[in-house]
Amino acid sequence: RAASYNMPWALAVGTPLKYATAPRLVDMLFYWWFPDSTFIDLQPTSVKFPTNDRTQWEAGNLKTESERVPMRKWVHFLLGESFSRLRETVGNMRWTSSEVYRFLVDLQTNASNTDGSVACEWLKANPKRWQQWVPLGTKGPRGWGL
Image (cartoon, rainbow, N blue to C red; front, side, top):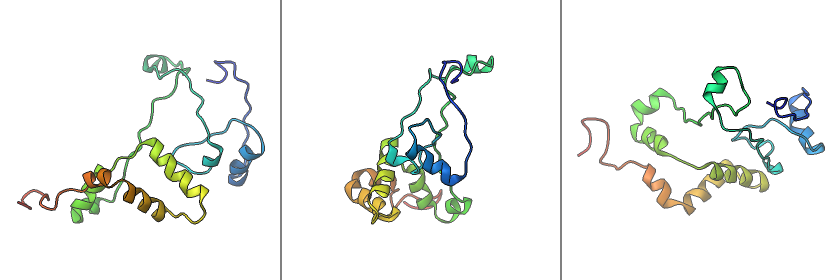
Protein backbone atom coordinates (compact mmCIF):
# COMPACT_ATOMS: atom_id res chain seq x y z
CA ARG A 1 0.00 0.00 0.00
CA ALA A 2 2.79 2.41 0.84
CA ALA A 3 4.15 2.14 -2.71
CA SER A 4 0.66 2.69 -4.14
CA TYR A 5 0.44 6.00 -2.29
CA ASN A 6 4.07 7.07 -2.85
CA MET A 7 4.94 6.77 0.82
CA PRO A 8 8.69 6.52 1.36
CA TRP A 9 9.57 3.69 3.73
CA ALA A 10 12.23 1.23 4.70
CA LEU A 11 12.00 -2.11 6.44
CA ALA A 12 14.14 -3.13 9.39
CA VAL A 13 14.26 -6.29 11.47
CA GLY A 14 15.55 -6.45 15.02
CA THR A 15 15.42 -8.25 18.31
CA PRO A 16 12.38 -7.81 20.56
CA LEU A 17 14.39 -5.32 22.64
CA LYS A 18 15.26 -3.23 19.58
CA TYR A 19 11.66 -3.45 18.40
CA ALA A 20 10.46 -1.92 21.66
CA THR A 21 13.29 0.65 21.87
CA ALA A 22 13.72 2.01 18.33
CA PRO A 23 10.46 4.04 18.14
CA ARG A 24 11.51 5.85 21.31
CA LEU A 25 14.87 6.84 19.79
CA VAL A 26 13.78 7.83 16.29
CA ASP A 27 10.60 9.37 14.91
CA MET A 28 9.46 6.48 12.76
CA LEU A 29 6.60 4.42 11.45
CA PHE A 30 6.35 1.18 13.42
CA TYR A 31 4.13 -1.87 13.61
CA TRP A 32 1.82 -2.10 16.62
CA TRP A 33 -1.35 -3.98 17.42
CA PHE A 34 -4.09 -3.27 19.90
CA PRO A 35 -4.55 -4.10 22.70
CA ASP A 36 -0.86 -4.09 23.63
CA SER A 37 0.95 -1.76 26.03
CA THR A 38 4.42 -1.81 24.41
CA PHE A 39 4.06 1.64 22.84
CA ILE A 40 1.05 3.02 24.73
CA ASP A 41 3.18 5.85 26.18
CA LEU A 42 3.93 7.07 22.63
CA GLN A 43 0.21 7.51 21.94
CA PRO A 44 0.47 5.82 18.54
CA THR A 45 -1.95 6.59 15.75
CA SER A 46 -2.90 4.46 12.78
CA VAL A 47 -2.02 5.07 9.17
CA LYS A 48 -5.42 5.16 7.51
CA PHE A 49 -6.02 3.93 4.00
CA PRO A 50 -9.36 3.94 2.18
CA THR A 51 -11.99 1.64 3.68
CA ASN A 52 -11.76 -2.00 2.65
CA ASP A 53 -13.12 -2.78 -0.78
CA ARG A 54 -13.60 -6.54 -0.98
CA THR A 55 -14.10 -6.45 -4.76
CA GLN A 56 -10.72 -4.76 -5.24
CA TRP A 57 -9.04 -7.23 -2.87
CA GLU A 58 -10.52 -10.19 -4.77
CA ALA A 59 -9.07 -8.70 -7.96
CA GLY A 60 -5.62 -8.44 -6.31
CA ASN A 61 -5.73 -4.68 -5.70
CA LEU A 62 -4.77 -4.28 -2.03
CA LYS A 63 -4.75 -0.45 -1.91
CA THR A 64 -7.64 -0.32 0.58
CA GLU A 65 -7.42 -1.35 4.23
CA SER A 66 -7.71 -5.00 5.12
CA GLU A 67 -10.88 -6.13 6.81
CA ARG A 68 -11.09 -5.50 10.54
CA VAL A 69 -10.42 -8.46 12.79
CA PRO A 70 -12.77 -8.50 15.78
CA MET A 71 -11.45 -9.07 19.28
CA ARG A 72 -12.94 -12.21 20.72
CA LYS A 73 -13.07 -13.89 24.11
CA TRP A 74 -11.90 -17.48 24.37
CA VAL A 75 -12.53 -19.71 27.37
CA HIS A 76 -11.85 -23.32 28.24
CA PHE A 77 -14.77 -25.58 27.29
CA LEU A 78 -15.15 -26.81 30.89
CA LEU A 79 -15.97 -23.28 32.00
CA GLY A 80 -19.29 -23.55 30.21
CA GLU A 81 -20.02 -27.03 31.55
CA SER A 82 -19.01 -26.55 35.17
CA PHE A 83 -19.50 -22.83 35.71
CA SER A 84 -22.29 -21.77 33.37
CA ARG A 85 -23.08 -18.50 35.18
CA LEU A 86 -19.42 -17.47 35.06
CA ARG A 87 -19.26 -18.42 31.37
CA GLU A 88 -22.38 -16.35 30.70
CA THR A 89 -20.91 -13.39 32.60
CA VAL A 90 -17.71 -13.56 30.55
CA GLY A 91 -19.79 -13.81 27.37
CA ASN A 92 -21.75 -10.69 28.34
CA MET A 93 -18.68 -8.52 29.08
CA ARG A 94 -18.20 -5.58 26.72
CA TRP A 95 -15.62 -2.79 26.75
CA THR A 96 -15.00 -0.09 24.20
CA SER A 97 -11.58 0.31 22.58
CA SER A 98 -11.16 3.61 24.43
CA GLU A 99 -11.77 1.85 27.76
CA VAL A 100 -9.20 -0.83 26.99
CA TYR A 101 -6.74 1.90 25.92
CA ARG A 102 -7.36 3.66 29.26
CA PHE A 103 -6.69 0.41 31.17
CA LEU A 104 -3.34 0.06 29.39
CA VAL A 105 -2.41 3.70 30.07
CA ASP A 106 -3.33 3.33 33.75
CA LEU A 107 -1.17 0.22 34.03
CA GLN A 108 1.84 1.87 32.44
CA THR A 109 1.68 5.35 33.95
CA ASN A 110 1.45 4.32 37.59
CA ALA A 111 4.00 1.73 38.73
CA SER A 112 1.85 0.76 41.73
CA ASN A 113 -1.08 -0.22 39.49
CA THR A 114 -1.66 -3.89 38.81
CA ASP A 115 -4.11 -5.63 36.49
CA GLY A 116 -6.24 -6.30 39.56
CA SER A 117 -6.15 -2.73 40.90
CA VAL A 118 -7.08 -1.22 37.52
CA ALA A 119 -9.91 -3.73 37.13
CA CYS A 120 -11.09 -3.09 40.70
CA GLU A 121 -11.19 0.68 40.16
CA TRP A 122 -13.16 0.21 36.96
CA LEU A 123 -15.63 -2.12 38.71
CA LYS A 124 -16.16 0.37 41.55
CA ALA A 125 -16.70 3.23 39.10
CA ASN A 126 -19.05 1.31 36.76
CA PRO A 127 -21.44 -0.90 38.77
CA LYS A 128 -24.38 -0.33 36.41
CA ARG A 129 -22.33 -1.61 33.47
CA TRP A 130 -20.97 -4.80 35.00
CA GLN A 131 -24.14 -5.68 36.91
CA GLN A 132 -25.87 -6.06 33.54
CA TRP A 133 -23.32 -8.75 32.62
CA VAL A 134 -24.06 -10.98 35.62
CA PRO A 135 -26.95 -13.40 35.01
CA LEU A 136 -29.78 -13.60 37.51
CA GLY A 137 -29.38 -16.19 40.27
CA THR A 138 -32.63 -17.84 39.18
CA LYS A 139 -31.38 -18.34 35.65
CA GLY A 140 -29.40 -21.45 34.89
CA PRO A 141 -28.98 -24.31 32.44
CA ARG A 142 -32.10 -25.80 30.91
CA GLY A 143 -34.13 -27.50 33.60
CA TRP A 144 -32.60 -25.47 36.45
CA GLY A 145 -33.86 -22.38 38.23
CA LEU A 146 -37.43 -21.15 38.58
